[in-house]
Image (cartoon, rainbow, N blue to C red; front, side):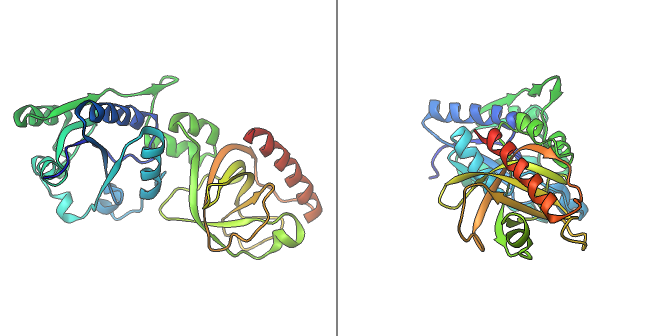
Length: 296
């Protein structure tokens, strides 16, 4: 017999403050019932599978798992593959599966949650299903901020525009990229400042081009202020490829091959071409000072 579980239903990309309302309610109901708290998500964006067109996401599955636990105390993330079988699963069977496989005794969903084949399941049908099966149910109303409905779609637009401080208000936490540090051309070490070159995990969304104040979290949990350039490095490179390069303030050591998390705090300026690497070096020094102030 599965342990009784209270499950928040959704995709939870970004784990924003609208999701937070569901997750707090889930944790509360789980405590009341002495049950396990869980959130449900898919391993990929359903729209990407259905259309065949990649959908940039705010969070990887691992980042969703970290955030729901760290911010809202949710114990388990249920990750289901979104494939043809899932796409054609009737909404009743979708709920049956969660009850049978995960011991669901209570569901929490948003006001606009749709589920099952052709999105036929609605919050009203979820309520009716739970009433018929003796299960608990909460449908949480939309969350707004400054008159704007909080949504992953809106936040993606902010990230693409480089409005990371605004995005953090809607997320309830800094937007972050995680990935493995890879080797670059070594130009920063020789001519300006050493940088960690990040290879983000696809299909996570890379912020719009610019220079950002960030906080970098290393595998051991240590955190450093930093400056991240997202762009083509026009002063030192002409190949046009977009890179994510971060200088960690006060850090010395080898990060190659290690997993780091870069949390974006605020956009400092546009990326631009400088007359010399000396001028670029001096500007980065000013960027570092600004980043240190923001990280305090």
